Every structure is written in C-alpha cells, then in structure tokens.
Figure 1: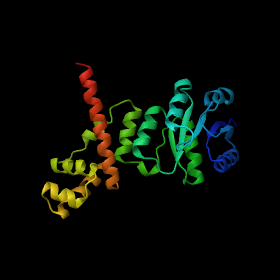
Figure 2: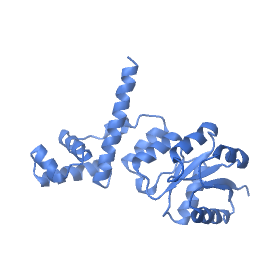
Figure 3: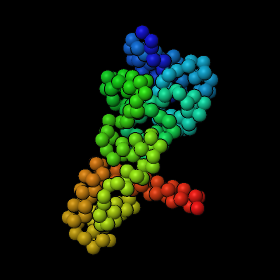
Figure 4: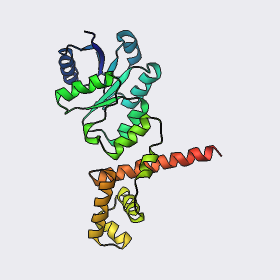
Length: 230
C-alpha cells in the first residue's frame, strides 16, 4: 500500500513525537520528517518530498502564516493542514487564502485526525467541525473558489436596526449601552441580537463582532478595487 508522506512542524517535542508515533501506526501514513520550526523548511521539503504538511498554527519562533505562504510559493501542490486548539475565524480565512487545505483541532479525537489527513490527501478542503454549516464556512468556500466573500455577507438580509446593532456590538457596546444609544428597551435589543445570531448562524456576540469586522474589511477592499478600476 502506498503511504501518505507527511512532514510534521511542531515545536513541542512531546507532541511532535507523540503525533509522529500515532501516524506511523497507520498502514497508509508515514511521517517522513519532523521539524520544530519553519526555518530551512524548503530544504526539508525538497529532501523529504512530503505530500501533506502538518503545521502547528502557534509556533513560538516563527509566524505560521508566513511559513504557509513560503511553502505554497515554492511547492504549490504540497497540501498543508494546520493544527490549533480553536483557531479564530479571521485566522482561518487568512490561512485558507494562503493555501491551507485543512484544519485539525488539537482536542480532536484520533479518528477525526486521521480522517482529516486522508480527506485532504484526496483533494478535499476540511474546516474545523464547529464552523460546518455556518455563514463563515460559506465565506471560506467563496474564498476557496476565488469569489468575493462579501457576496455571501450581502446576501443575508438584515433590517436597518439589526445592522445598527451589529455595528455597536462590533464597537464593544453592551446590550444596555446599545439600548441607550438607539433609544430601545434592553429586551428589544436582546431580541435583535437573537435574530442576528439566527440569520448569520452564529453562536455568540464575539462571532457577530468578528463577522462585522470581516464584512467591513471586504467592503473596504471592494471599494478600493472599484476605485483602482476608474
């Protein structure tokens, strides 16, 4: 059986050795090399010729995003899976745009760990499970396809009041502060927040704030692109 050749980049020695031992027990997987950081990674890839790279998103000595960009620039066909506890949505989008194919949560069960590696090897994109089916997963899918994520964001119908609430949440305002600023009752604000969460298929105010910042970022980019074309 042909084995999936894996290069592991993890700066925690115990994790590095543990993950390597676990993967090498699989009949279809083989860790061809292990490194503690992203330095000299191109030489290592050239020597080991891995098909999959497992990369710790929180390297202490290197910026993991820069490592991803460096790898994809020189070895476009090499697939990269990043590992983290719970990556932020903004981080996920950046890594997908940089060329990452999959994400593994460090508290994932062993079978999910293996499944992600095999799925990415087969050419699939794998997002963290907690984002599956969310608006954000649709945004990421748009990014993968090269479309503007703002198309998905704009497709969600919000009332004028709901958009005002989103902006105030993004600014860090509490429900009480939003109620005072918009001359509403706290109960009404809570109702708006509930509706916003349902429409965006999100779970918390923090996610609403990140959605707002993401939306503004892409709208700004869209405006700049439009200005450049004039």
